[in-house]
Length: 121
Picture 1: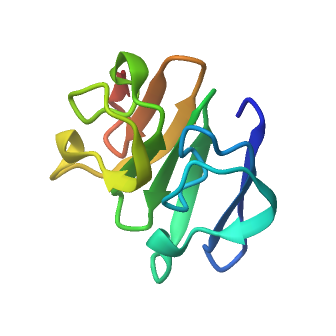
Picture 2: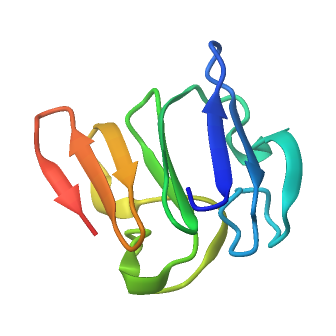
């Protein structure tokens, strides 16, 4: 992302650090984090794919669930509004589908489902 970083460990744990002024680190606060910190909201869930946007983040868990958080401007979190989210929130638009991969940019998010469909917000 622009000023924040995301990392997965081999066991599927998810870590973030850097700029967190818009909640993009997923720790429930709008605060910078100088050292890698585990995202506790996703503890116990194996994360398989991540995306770091300008001020937002994306994660896909092993069951194909997409979660997003951070700055919600332009609807880029996929929750049907422009609200910021400080913790990973399930993207309900993908209920019943398995997300396989994600990417994030300045003002958009992209998701690829297991059946090959591509979605953008």
